[in-house]
Length: 471
Ligand code: SAH
Ligand code: SF4
Ligand code: F3S
Image 1 (cartoon, rainbow, N blue to C red):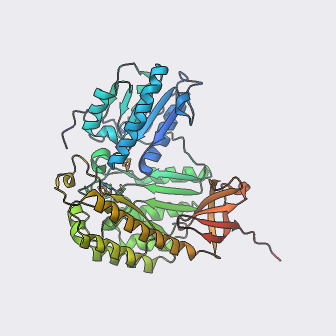
Image 2: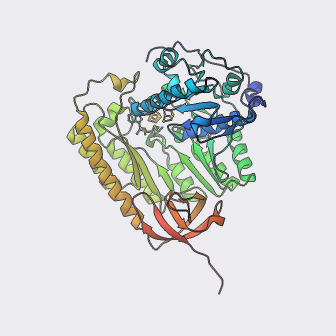
């Protein structure tokens, strides 16, 4: 990657970090004004957007879902694949038109894309109507940047991570389920992946800060927390302490919050102790997202994934045998440079052996600055698309097969919202992360209820509420 001509890093003292005035900047300068926020990418970005919403709220803005009526448009971007880029630039085209009608409209672009030097430069040269450009390491600057915004573009992107901020005032999307960052960045440098460049090196939050946040969420009535990190199993390895992810998980479980989830688990750091802790505590949900990426040991090596097909299968088996009823989902990339038919067959073989509950599947997208992007590729896009189709069909068959096993069974569902499947329906997730649409029961939003599953589809279940009465 070209060395970014972005600023290096912002380091603050521990005291400043604890109080981050900039993040929690309060002002009524924008009272009555509206913001439109669009989030691309992973859960990390979704949670960062909760921080951005908190910042905007503290400045007096309220949210609108119609970008044309907004006074400020904020895009929290993702750089993981080329189509994520395309979506952002496509939307910016529409914003450019709107800005002609509304010259006072503020436009801010942040997140993973501006962390790439080429994108920051492109925004500077081709998108001068964007007022504010910020990165993943200085979301907390956004409030000040908005207050100070001028018509001239203000680019504040730091190429190196600074320190971790605490006491962030999130405006959370849900009153029942909360994201909790346990670490930032990633040190794995898988050869295809841009994340270590856009998010910096791994930094774990101190265990006491995480536990304090979870306790507070529980006291506020949250029923579920999802511990977030690019590679949660490596939690603590960068800290000068003896504790690891299993210890953290056990301590979070002991707080007694109803449901605990975590994403994402890299197979490399998955320890026996973790498996034991997950199996032991009923409030740690029996659901693991375990990205495979490829079933070919040759491709896995080229990807820098640090495990073989056999090691993945062994870990998979161990998890299945040790955690009763566990569901496992995965991520798979097809069309890594020079992936042969035989390599692809190996991927299908792992899918057939593991019969995943679900899988996110992607066609490999070369990312500028990553080692894999330099490999000359002999496989055509047509072949890659065909492979994706074959893989998706197989993966969906297994999802449906798993879902069918639920029909007639009783499950616990945390009902979180109205269902998109009809005005008289609500929805939520089982312990094992299956989406269930339920008839009626609007008064049950925010509760964990017993549901009998009536029908299985590939991506969701239908069910009805069951009330137990003493006869
Ligand atoms: N930290 C997580 C992954 C985050 S990115 C992990 O290691 O599991 C989410 C998924 O995007 C990855 O698991 C991978 O399957 C996919 N991905 C990452 N880079 C990609 C690329 N260059 N092309 C296609 N898919 C990619
Ligand atoms: Fe990317 Fe690999 Fe890190 Fe996941 S573990 S974020 S795929 S470099
Ligand atoms: Fe995308 Fe950044 Fe997440 S690149 S996948 S939003 S870490």
